[in-house]
Every structure is written in C-alpha cells, then in structure tokens.
Amino acid sequence: MDLFDFLLLFLLSFTGSCFAQSVLPPGPKDAAVGQNVTLNLLYVTKPDDITVWSYSNGATATNVATLRPTGVQVNAAYKGRASVNTTNGYLTLASLTAKDSGEYSVSIIGDGDTLTGEIKVRVLDPVSNVVIKSDLPEAIEQNSTVVLTCSASGSFLKFSWTNITSPIVADGTRLTFTDTDNSSKLTIKDVLRSDLMGPIFCKAENSLQSAQSPAFNLTVYYGPDNVFITPLKPTEYIESKTDFNLTCSTTSSPPATFTWFHNTTPIKATGPILTLKTIEEQGFGKITGDYSCRAQNAKTSRMASSAAVRFTVMEPISGAKITYPSGVLIAGNSSANLSCQAMSGNVTEITWLKDDKPLVSSPLVVISSDKSSVFISLLKKEDNGLYTCRLRNAVSKKEDFYKMVVIYGPEPAKVEGDNQAQLDQRVVLTCAAASIPPANITWKLNGTVLNTKTNEFIIENALYKDSGTYTCEAYNAVTGRTTTYSHVLMVKEEIDNGLSDGAIAGIVIACLVALAASIALIFYCRQKVPVESPY
Ligand SMILES: *[C@@H]1O[C@H](CO)[C@@H](O)[C@H](O)[C@H]1NC(C)=O
Ligand SMILES: *[C@@H]1O[C@H](CO)[C@@H](O)[C@H](O)[C@H]1NC(C)=O
Ligand SMILES: *[C@@H]1O[C@H](CO)[C@@H](O)[C@H](O)[C@H]1NC(C)=O
Ligand SMILES: *[C@@H]1O[C@H](CO)[C@@H](O)[C@H](O)[C@H]1NC(C)=O
Ligand SMILES: *[C@@H]1O[C@H](CO)[C@@H](O)[C@H](O)[C@H]1NC(C)=O
Ligand SMILES: *[C@@H]1O[C@H](CO)[C@@H](O)[C@H](O)[C@H]1NC(C)=O
Ligand SMILES: *[C@@H]1O[C@H](CO)[C@@H](O)[C@H](O)[C@H]1NC(C)=O
Ligand SMILES: *[C@@H]1O[C@H](CO)[C@@H](O)[C@H](O)[C@H]1NC(C)=O
Ligand SMILES: *[C@@H]1O[C@H](CO)[C@@H](O)[C@H](O)[C@H]1NC(C)=O
Ligand SMILES: *[C@@H]1O[C@H](CO)[C@@H](O)[C@H](O)[C@H]1NC(C)=O
Ligand SMILES: *[C@@H]1O[C@H](CO)[C@@H](O)[C@H](O)[C@H]1NC(C)=O
Ligand SMILES: *[C@@H]1O[C@H](CO)[C@@H](O)[C@H](O)[C@H]1NC(C)=O
Image 1 (cartoon, rainbow, N blue to C red):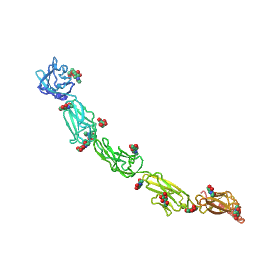
Image 2: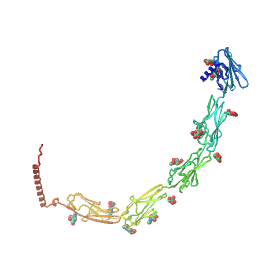
Image 3: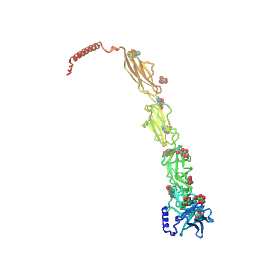
Image 4: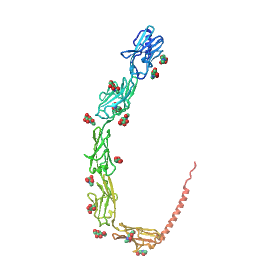
C-alpha cells in the first residue's frame, strides 16, 4: 500500500483539491475490544494545519480531539483514551469498547484549503467460547441424522470445520452446513461409523482473531457386521475333553453379545468363546450337529448370525486289551481265540497284525466279521509270533500286544559237523531240532550218555578214542516227545598215513628234475640276451 499512499499524496499535492476519501485509507478498520486503534492519515500535515477528529454513531457527531499548532485538545469524553500525534496528526484511541464503533471523520484545515475524510471503525468482540455440541448424545449408524452446532461469541464470525486435519466440505446430500452470525450447523444424514471419529474441530474467526473448539467426537454405534466362527472348518471329529473352543467374532460397537446354537437348540453359554467343556456338559456333541452363533448389539438392536460349523465330539479309545487263551497251546491239538476290546471309546476300526504284518485269514485262521476276534481252530507252529490288535477311531489309536507261544516239537533232530578229523583237530558237532519250548539235548557216544547238554558238542583236541557214533537226543518236556539223530565221527591217529612211499619218491624225483630244468633255462637266457649298441 506504500505505493498507493504515495500516489494519493502525489495527486493531492498537485490538485490541492478536496477528495472525500483522500486523506484517510478505506475502511472499515477493525479493532478488538480493549485494544488500541490508530487512525492514520494519507496526507502529510503541515505544522500550521489544524486537524479535527470527530466521531459519529450515525445520529449525532462528537468532537474527539483537535490538533492545533499550539497543541492537542482532547474532548472531555475521551480524556485519557484519545491522543493525536503532534508530528503527523494520527488519532489513537485506547481501551476500545463496543460503543467506539462508528464513523470517524477528520478535517484538516490548512492554508486556505480544508481536507476531509471518513473511516468506519468496527470494535470487535473477541472470539471465544467456540464449542461443538451434538443434538444427539450418541448415534446409530445409518439410522441417525446428527446435527452438530458450533457456536462462538465474537463479532463478524466465519466458521470452518476440520476432520482430523482436513477440512469438512458439504457434499450437498449427506453433509450440509447452515451458518448464522454466531453459529454453524453441520448436518450429517445417515451417519456412518467413520464420520465422527475425528477428532473434529470447529474454527470461528473474524478479521482480527480466530479460536478453535476443543476436539469433538461422537460415538456412532454400529454392527454387528459379518459374524464368523473360528475355526471355520473344524475337523469332522473333535476329541472329547480336549482344549477345543469355538470363537465367535464380529465387528460391533458396543461389543456384541453372543448366543450359541446346536442346530436350532440354544446352548447355555455366554461370551464369544464356546468351550468343548460347555458343549459336552450340556450333552451336545455326541450327535453330529451344526454349531452357529448369533451376535446382538444392544444399542443398534441389530443381530446377525454366523454360518454353521459342523463336527462330532468323539471319545478317544483307552485301554485296548487282547484277551487270549489261558492254557498251554499245543500245535496240532489246541485252538486259540484272541479277542480285542477297548475299555472306553467308540472303536471304528480294528486291525490285526502278526509280527507287524497284516494277519491273513485262512481256513484255520478266521477273523470275525466285526474284526473283534480271531479264531485259530488248530494251531500250528507257524502261529507262534507277536500279535497286535490296533483299535482306531477318528481321534485316537491304541494297540495291545500278545506273544503267542504254541508248543510243538521237537522236529526231527539233525547233527552237523565233520565226519572225519585229524588227531588234535578241533571238532564241533551241532544238533538242531526245532521245538517250543527249546528241546533238552542229550549227547551219547556209542550209546553212553555224555555230560554235554548244549546244542553244540565241542572236542577241542580230537583223539582216536573220540571216534564213534554220536547221538543227539532232543526232548521236549511239554510234549514229551524225543527225536534223535546219529552222526559218525572218525579220528585218524597218524598224520603221514596219507601218502605211500612210492608217491614220496616220485615227488622227490619230480622236484629234482624241475630244479635242473630251471638252472638250464637261466644259463640259456644269459647267453641269448643281446647287448644294445650305444650308437
Ligand atoms: C508521532 O509520529 C512520529 C512520526 O510518524 C513518530 O516518530 C512518533 O514516535 C510518534 N509519536 C507518538 C507519541 O506516537
Ligand atoms: C494503548 O494505549 C494506552 C494509552 O495510550 C497505552 O498505555 C497502551 O500501551 C496501548 N496499548 C497498546 C497495545 O498499544
Ligand atoms: C447468537 O445470535 C442469536 C441472535 O442472532 C442470539 O439470540 C444468540 O444468543 C447468540 N448466541 C450466542 C452464543 O452468542
Ligand atoms: C472424517 O475422516 C474420516 C477419515 O478420513 C472419514 O471417513 C469421514 O467420513 C470424515 N468425516 C466427515 C464428517 O467428513
Ligand atoms: C473420542 O471418543 C472416544 C470414545 O468415547 C474417546 O476414547 C476418545 O478419547 C475421544 N477422542 C477425543 C479426541 O475426544
Ligand atoms: C479356550 O477357552 C478357554 C477359556 O476361555 C481358554 O482358557 C483356553 O486357552 C482356550 N483354548 C484355546 C485352544 O484357545
Ligand atoms: C432405525 O430406523 C428404522 C427406520 O427408520 C427404525 O424402524 C428403527 O427402529 C431404527 N433403529 C433404531 C435402533 O433406532
Ligand atoms: C490233545 O487234546 C486232547 C483233547 O482235546 C487232549 O486230551 C490231549 O491230551 C491233547 N494232547 C496233548 C499232547 O496235549
Ligand atoms: C472268541 O471270543 C469272543 C469274545 O470272548 C467271542 O465273542 C467269540 O464268540 C469267540 N469266538 C469263538 C469262535 O469262540
Ligand atoms: C460309534 O460310531 C458309530 C459310527 O460312527 C455309530 O454308529 C455309533 O452309534 C457310535 N457308538 C457310540 C456308543 O457312540
Ligand atoms: C530241560 O532244560 C531246562 C533248561 O535248560 C531244565 O530246566 C530242565 O530241567 C530240563 N528238563 C529235563 C527233563 O532235563
Ligand atoms: C565206538 O564204536 C566204534 C565201532 O564199533 C569203535 O571203533 C569205537 O572205538 C568206539 N568208541 C568208544 C569210545 O567206545
């Protein structure tokens, strides 16, 4: 504005004429209550000029102060509040009140010329008490129309709203504004949960001041939205008495309350977690069923249900046990009935194994149709072994074992070992006769019982007198049967009994001939090997 002021002064100095707006800047000039305002002139007064400041409230005009070359004279009504700068003629009013608002005029009486000007002064009340209020204490999403009123005290106020940090703008449908002099109304139709999370602020301002409301937010109740059960897909069978829960979840404000159902029957349970314990305590679970939950919001009065999850509670198997014959089992004579039971739990599958391989049925080995028992009508030695009964259901697996002992034998005995031995040679005779229980072995030489009771008969240093017929007797004390096997051992007394004198002479002659031939060959080679010339 410096250039503008300068131009005005330039014009004035040339024309010297009287322009209505030329000596004072354009108004209105705003000042706050209690503050000072200085009305400056666009005209440079001369020392001889008389400057007269007056006030008009529209009806009457009053002199405020007059500057003469002799000094400043302040009207009694403005004593202590008004002052005129003796150098430039500017009027300063201190401690402004609302009553100081109005038109101020100045007359500069100079050398033959009189310049006059007017300016409007507005004394503004300070901006204060900016506050947002809602017509509703709480709102319901999509149902409520919320009217927020921002009010403030102060003069010539303009309002603006911010949401977090960005301005809120009317969209003409859901969000509309209605402003008055001292308030602004924000109307939100079909309010959404996100609308008023804020914080929301309202700012009231005029040309001098601005003030912001405290942060405002309004609870908008909503939900329940989609309701889910976790786990979404539980396994078909859930093991009884385990730490298994169904959890129901949804978004809702305030938090939803939950009701649980087994098919259509309500389950007595509260809260978002339904434990397996509760399910079992109320006798649900034994029957395959659909479990669902319903969420309910007390404020919105809305409810929503989850999709159902299906499972059956199953007791695990415990105490698998094989029942087996109590007496002694004898091959070719006894039969055996093995049966397998669980102490508790619903068994859905029974498997029989013998020595870790699936038990095969045969005319003699009959597995009952429900697989709970195996009947062997006539036992054979091959039936000896470790029997496993494996019980299974969807949630567990249990086994029991039975080692079946079938008495048999001894089978025909057989002795293995040398039939001939040299003097001092170590000789081992082994007697084998399959038998359960293992057969007691008795060794005899030429019909005389020997001390050895083991399967192996060992002669450390064979002597001629060890020759003879060795008989192994295998005896099964349970079957009372004995099998025997006879084995002949010959011990040769003299080592050189093997070659005749003639044979020995022949060998000696052959050696001598071979030696002579070797010597002849060596001599022959020495003569025939050519020596290579170095050239
Ligand atoms: C009067 O105005 C002059 C020139 O603008 C300035 O230097 C001086 O400080 C003012 N005096 C008072 C009392 O304000
Ligand atoms: C207003 O004027 C009074 C008296 O002239 C003075 O004491 C005070 O400091 C001034 N206040 C301001 C803010 O200029
Ligand atoms: C706002 O202005 C109206 C009249 O325009 C008045 O009745 C009301 O009291 C004012 N409210 C405040 C807070 O100043
Ligand atoms: C406030 O801001 C949030 C997040 O940007 C927005 O979802 C919501 O609609 C806004 N509210 C208003 C009243 O503009
Ligand atoms: C908004 O409201 C919530 C809940 O009533 C409150 O926890 C939060 O402090 C409030 N935030 C502000 C900025 O007022
Ligand atoms: C099931 O819920 C109970 C009680 O709420 C809790 O103690 C337990 O840890 C939960 N179990 C699982 C597996 O989440
Ligand atoms: C929501 O609005 C509908 C229709 O205006 C009304 O029937 C219902 O009662 C309202 N719900 C609540 C919780 O006020
Ligand atoms: C075989 O079985 C019969 C009766 O079943 C019994 O009388 C007999 O003693 C048995 N034989 C043996 C060797 O156990
Ligand atoms: C084997 O024993 C089970 C259980 O005791 C019984 O049900 C079954 O009939 C018996 N089988 C035979 C062939 O005796
Ligand atoms: C055991 O399971 C079978 C098949 O799933 C079912 O038919 C039967 O009723 C169950 N028995 C018990 C005692 O749960
Ligand atoms: C058979 O042998 C066992 C152990 O080797 C022994 O306890 C038992 O007395 C023997 N029986 C006979 C009849 O010799
Ligand atoms: C056993 O009998 C054979 C032939 O009868 C005989 O050669 C041998 O010396 C006898 N051995 C003993 C230890 O009696």
